[in-house]
Length: 497
Image (cartoon, rainbow, N blue to C red):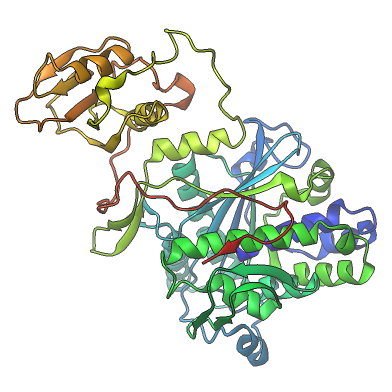
């Protein structure tokens, strides 16, 4: 998340009338990856070109690289200042974000993807998403060195492109979003850009002192320098929710930073603009086809309150991977719908018997409803469960039904004449009710199969081909909450753990 600032700071320079002289130099000096995105090859989205799905989508990646954007190694003094130490040779992309910007440039939503999100790839099977880049890069490096290619800039460019392409594909599969542009920044960029705006305010609920990240801060509101800010956003140990609290901390910091970057005091200060340009030059790597000037014009009306930070929905933050590692699990269909809603918010529908469930009566009070997915439409059961929750139904779990047990949608209770079960069946469009005497009193199972067309059902545009769940969810399955929505507007920093 530290690199989101790099991109938004550069954008702030670009949209500033005062900064256009700086922009001409900046657009020529930013480091360009060899990466060419599919949408650019096909003449699709990007810059001022036609936007095919209603948004420009930017994949922002923060790496732990100990070089700058030009490939120059950081000095010992810079490494010491950043509390970075020596890298182990493997590049990790511990911060991954997709920024969705509607084609009118009216707002931007930056969506974080937790580093431990467990995904399936065709090349490497199941793994955490922060390891995808490194896996592709390592394989490419071995391939090139075995073919006799010597170490150097040409090899490093091909290695980087392989990692970038692999990560883009994994993010697209997870989110359903076609990536139009790619931006990457390393450790140095965050500190330089923070210092370039004169430091940024944060607020902590409690004092922290954690030596691994270098975080040592009192409680309350305070202004951090670049090196301090890097420690602030990198801390993940000794936080109540570990990496999830780090995401919230980063987003609150980013919101304050964007607000300051877009403020008149920054954009009308030639010295600040010069420092921002110099910082971006050492920090940012962009895909080679990005018309950054055209993009800047598209975003010229953006204000702090129009930038929102949020996180993909997850089903569990205490899951277990194939090798016993701790993971975050997701419902891919749910993630796809969430990403679509960032550009096309669901419109309020008129309440009619055909589209909305009738009011659910008092019979369901005190009952636990378990929603079982027995179909092939990913996210269908979760969508119906979300619909029921809005009607104050106590949905306690969403999971997959035993294979072959159910062939059609139905409500299951210990007694088929149970009034609560019949009430639920009526509210969902008249589903049949069946009996399973093994169910405990007060428990109802709602089976959602491919024939379901009642309230909460996904329309054709939101349906995702079924994908087998990846990893084993933890005990918090269906109850995990990752991060609140945070905007870059407001009168002060949000206080966080």
